[in-house]
Image (cartoon, one colour):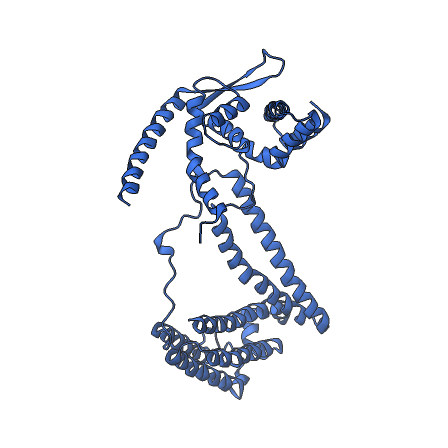
Amino acid sequence: MTELTDRYVYAATRFVTDQDERVELDRELRERIADTVDGHRSAGLGPAEAEERALTELGDPLRVSAAYRERPMYLIGPRHYFAWQRVMVIVLATAPWIVGVIDLIVMISTREPVETVIAGTISTIVMVAVQAAFWITLGFAVAERVTTPADGDVDRWTPERLPQLPESTGRGKLSDLIASLVFLVIVAGLIVWQRFGSLVVVDGERMPVLDPALWDVWIPVMFLLLALEAVHAVWVYRTGWTWPAAIVNLPISLAWGALLGWLFVSGRLLNPDFLDRVGLSQGAIDRSQPYVLAVLAVIIAWELVDGFYKAYRRGRQ
Amino acid sequence: MGIDDSVTAGHLQELRRGTVVLAALAALRTPGYGYALLESLTTAGIHVDANTLYPLLRRLEKQGLLTSEWNTDEPRPRKFYRTSPDGEQLVATLTAEWHRLDDSLRNLTEEI
């Protein structure tokens, strides 16, 4: 045995933590190398040449070690690959953007300079995406090594998982139209109801939740927006989610976001007497601002993305 | 246009893959060590790569189809493998399957 063989065996066994397993692998490799060298020598090669050839034939010691010990030579194998891919797509399509929007709102509400807001939001989105991808991959790589094929397929497929066929071009779904219209009617009803039927009664008079001053201009604007949404819903039903439908969805959704956000931040949305009555201080309202705005932003962003995604999917057919 | 050589080589390798297990289990009814088995299989016309055979012996041992023992009588210790009773049984099963496949394939290929 020469130093070259010793180095080879060391390279192949040094990461084997179990003592018995390492000794066994060491002995087996030495037997194989010695026999192979002898074989080459009896074919007429010199000692150094024979050893060189034998080790070259064995190949990368880490690979040999993995083959002997039946360790996977990949990070995530076919058993877990599609589960990994599915989780990655879902998480990367949602988490970074939601956290990014919340971060954006918080920074805007704390009056950071615009460069800081933009740079901070981008770095938050990138950081969340990188972190999510890393931890998901690490989790699956560990699962690959601690589970055996005998444990069965963790992500067992059944025919119920088959996706629906893409909706035929042309009309949208009637169920979507009905759901939209019912929702809009409920919202309109709530606006009226909170004015005349509020559950908070003071001195025999019902106390509105929204600031009564809004009835001059902004509540009529809300009704106008609701009417526009209804028209939009009918349009989507008649033509499907086209690009123009998705684009028109943009100003309507943004108008909702801007209107509600602005009224809330400037303290004009809720009735001060009502807040007083239910024991909410202005301080509590102010502190809740970033969170309320964040939730609002997520809802609006979802609306927009949903519209464009549906238009994109439809366009691909 | 002829078939690509590498395509042919790949399919031949696929076809031979399962036969190595049968050949090794059959040969090791007489105990032997890795290199000797490699040589005897080659002499018998079963071509197998050392990088396939050595890990395969370990795997078959893990599955209980082979037993092993270190022979330290000689100056150079060698691991001797021997086919276990389970291994014998598998040899019988695989041999029967081999003949069945041979018959089936003969019927198929002679029809052409």
